[in-house]
Image 1 (cartoon, protein in one colour):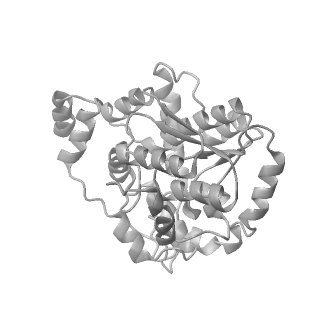
Image 2 (cartoon, rainbow, N blue to C red):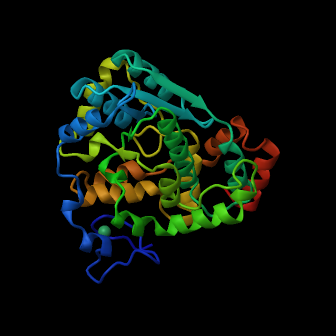
Image 3 (tube, rainbow, N blue to C red):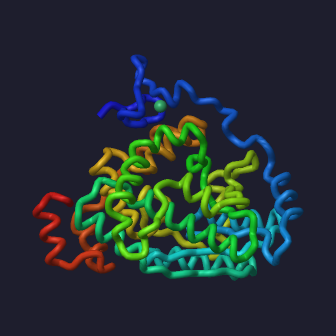
Amino acid sequence: MIKCKKCMLIASKYIKIQEDGICDICHEHKPELLLSIDFEKKVKKIKKQSKGKYHCILMCSGGKDSVSALLTIKEKYGLNPIVFTFDHGFEDSTAINNVIKACKYVDCDSILRRYTELKSVFKVIVKENIKVSPCSVCSMWYMIKSYELAKSLKVKYIIAGWTKGQMSSKENKTEYMEMSKDTSDFIKNRMRQIKGFEKFPLSMDKINQKYGKGIEVISPHWFNSDISDNEKIELIKKTGWEKTDSYPKNSTNCIFNFISSYIQLKCYGYTHYNIEMSKLIRQNQMTKEQAQEKLEFSKNKDFLGEILIKNRICDEKDWDIYCRKGNF
Ligand SMILES: [Zn+2]
């Protein structure tokens, strides 16, 4: 595996590494891609444009990024959000409790919705050993849910706790090309045969066009006034926030994320976290060594099997078969 010596992206059909050992993305990187305006200006616009009860939807997973986003927009900028948390059946109870505690602390309305429909998709991916990133499919699915909620509440802004590494841009598209292509193929050839997903859009662009018209998705962490990880933890400590066991290290993700990361590493040699962190390295927000440490995957097969069996993605007999076939 050839890696870019600067950002550690792995060479692929879409990512070329030049003779100097540095990838095209690093060579073409322009720092001005970041949002240079202050979040304060954005807030003024949000307040001016809001007609309903809420200024925005705040997507909250219970991790440090989204909880600190909630505290920032409510306490520092005086926005009135409705907090939206979805549980597709794999949310960590510590993370859900973090959301409840944070909402109580800032005293805002919230919606927690549990859906079981995505499990049937995950089951197919695991059973049929499909080369796809389950996280890509899930992110498309939850954006539809968020847009639908925004529309029903007549809210024009969805605020997420995404970091600068999760910012969408043109350069992003090249890095995700390999996974996006497989995601579209999977949706077209397999996922649409699953009940409830017959008309599922083939790409995030299609979702933005179909569901996201007139709705802007932003994160306070994309702006100049962004705070560091330690400052985020310092800020949210007062809500009673607790850390969860997650991949990458010191993040908060759902429990299926361990499976998804394993599948991505097996299929591609990297996960979407490698892409996010390569962006942070390029923007001098993280060092190569810090990324390397966070990205180390240390969970063994037994741990993964336990997650799948406990959450009824497969039973013990199936798990034995998957292991014997070499899927895990
Ligand atoms: Zn690079």
